[in-house]
Structure formats: structure tokens, C-alpha cells
Length: 95
Image (cartoon, rainbow, N blue to C red; front, side):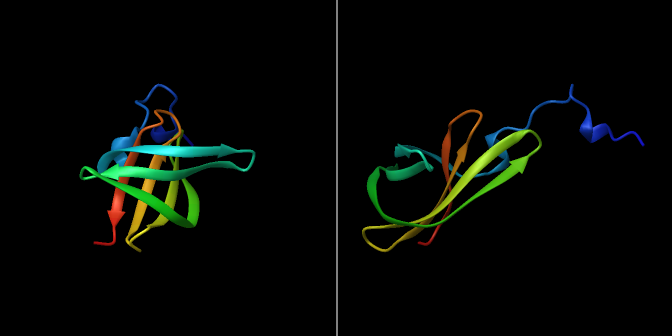
């Protein structure tokens, strides 16, 4: 059966699929992957105290890495990184 959503000539999804504010993130790269260390959000530097959860989601052929993090003030944020564009966004915050 023909599935028009499976066509290779359709536009690729992009990181706009995860709405949120673009942020600058500093990451640590290790054999197990990469993890955010700190990020700027609303002009404030947030040092990440711990990464509580990581997961991946696919939208079409694009892969997103998501991180539930807690900063030094115990604020929770969900950071999303597009593997294709390497752009980071805050898609949820605990404020």
C-alpha cells in the first residue's frame, strides 16, 4: 500500500517541531554520549546540577535528544537538541 508520508522527496522535519526558546548550551562529550553542563536562558547562566532523564525522539528522519535537567537552584528544565542542526531549545521549564 502506498504511504505518501513515507516518500523520500517530502520536506524534512526540523527542530521547529519542538517549540521553545533557542538557548546556548555547553556540553561534555564522552564515549557514552554528550551531556549539557550549563546553558543561558533569559540572559541567565544556569549550571546543571544533574541530568535526571535523557531520551530520544524521532520526527520523520530527524532525531532529537532530550534532557530533563535540574540547575543549581533546583529549577527543572527540559532541553532539546536536534541531531541534524545541533540547535538547542528549552521546551519546558519548571518556573
